[in-house]
Image (cartoon, rainbow, N blue to C red; front, side, top):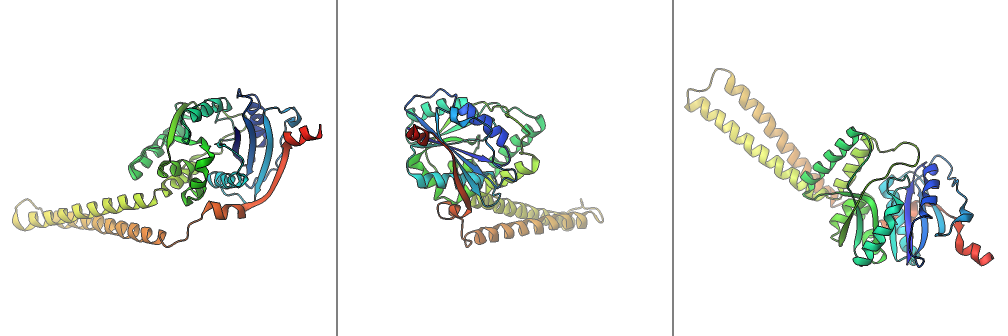
Length: 325
C-alpha cells in the first residue's frame, strides 16, 4: 500500500520537524510505504526541516510544495490533494495537521478501518478537545449553528483517510476549495467515523483564534450556501407574514375593540412594520444571493489549483538513497 500523507504548514516548521519523527515511529505493516507531502502555504519563515532525514526508515519521500501566496488552510489542502492526484501512484491519502493535534498514533487505526470498509473515507471523529474552555464553547456554538443553518451535523475535521478511488470526485468538486469536512458530508461519498482524541501541540501556539474560527465556520457553511439561503428566505418570509398579521391585529384592536390606548397602537404597528420591512429585505437579499451564486464561475480545484504551486522540491527520498547504495 502506497500512502500519501498531506500536511499543510504555515510557519510551523518546528512542529513539522517533530511530526516527521513521530510519523517514522508509528507501527505499520512493512508493506505500507509512506510519502509525506508538505504544502507550504506561503510561509514567511523559510522551510527548514530540523530532523536527521538520513535516519528515516518508514518515510520513503518528503516533498515540499510551495504556494505562490497564502491561500488558507482549506485551500492549501485542496491544492495538495490535486497534486497527489496527478501522481497516480498512491492507494490512499491521509490529510492531517502538522502541529500534533492530529495524532500520528491514530494512523494505524485509520488504515485498519479502511481495510474493513474498502472504498469508504475514514474520518477521525473528535471525542476530546484539549484547550481553553472559551474556545471549546465557541467551537460547540459553531457546530450548533452549522446544524441549524444546514440541517446536517458536522463532528469531524480535516484528519481523514481518503481512498485514491474517491480522490477524483473530491478534487473536481468546487466546494473543497472552501471546506474539506463540509464537502465530504455533502458529496454523499461513503463515510465512516472513527472516534479519536485530539492531541496536544508539539510546539508554539495554535493559530486558530476567534476570527479564524469564524472564517472556518463561514467556509463550511459556504458548502451549503444554497440550503442556508433557502432557510434564511423561508425564515424571513415567515417573520414578515407574522408581523403582517400582528399589524392587522393591532388595527383590529384599535378599530373594533376598547383595548387600545392612545399612542399604543401606532407605536406597536410601527415597530411591527419595521420588522416586516427588514424581513422582506433579508428575503430579497437571500434570493438575489442565490441567483448571483449560480452565475459566477466556480473554482474547480482539479483545473485551477496547479496555478498556485510556485515550486516543488524533494527534500528526502529513500528510493534515491537506496539506489545510490
